[in-house]
Length: 96
Image 1 (cartoon, one colour):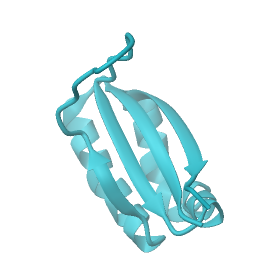
Image 2 (cartoon, rainbow, N blue to C red):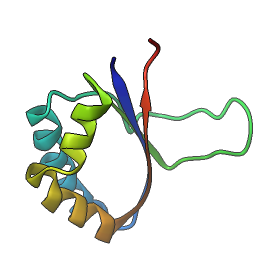
Image 3 (cartoon, rainbow, N blue to C red):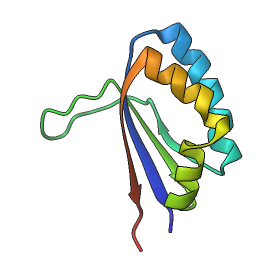
Image 4 (cartoon, rainbow, N blue to C red):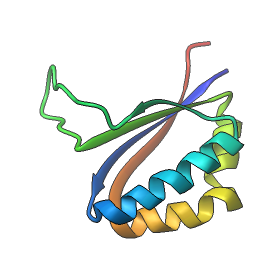
């Protein structure tokens, strides 16, 4: 069953974040992930949620997403992101 990583990001250093995006994309691809949303324009339709940046990545399964999350390929990028941005990250399984 497909699983989706949803990430709300507040970027503190845009130039370093550009480096992160390249590193993260390579790691996501290595684990078969596919970006569905990557920072496009946001329109709040209800409530007070106003994310600065939203990213949604599809993986073939939650297990594969967790393999990516804990991988050596993503480790350096994750460490960089944690230094230059604040994020909220969730993993949710799709409809079965």
